[in-house]
Image 1 (cartoon, one colour):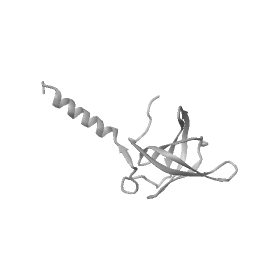
Image 2 (cartoon, rainbow, N blue to C red):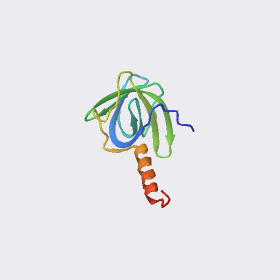
Image 3 (cartoon, one colour):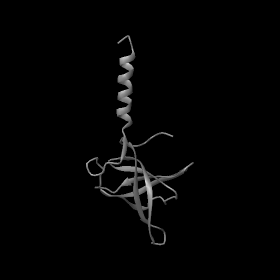
Image 4 (cartoon, rainbow, N blue to C red):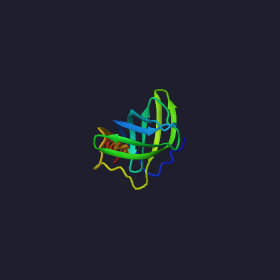
Length: 122
């Protein structure tokens, strides 16, 4: 499957509350694991599916991000839900820094630098 994201995601791990209204208008709130995040979207892991186009809130001790569900798939250990933040709402490290973060681009740069150091022909 081709990655069609318009911006790179930061891999992360932190707990967030996911709140939305179900099809009957009942308020729902569950804890989820934040899997990755970018300025305009994120992926969370839940133990239940969420309907496409559902509007929701991701709440953390440091703030709230409102979003819309764009995709939801089951993978071995739970449902992975991709969300797009509401227009005008943007994630930055300054307003919310997940507990564990890894930028794959920086990891690739470190690996390339280490490979150059080990190559005797450079």
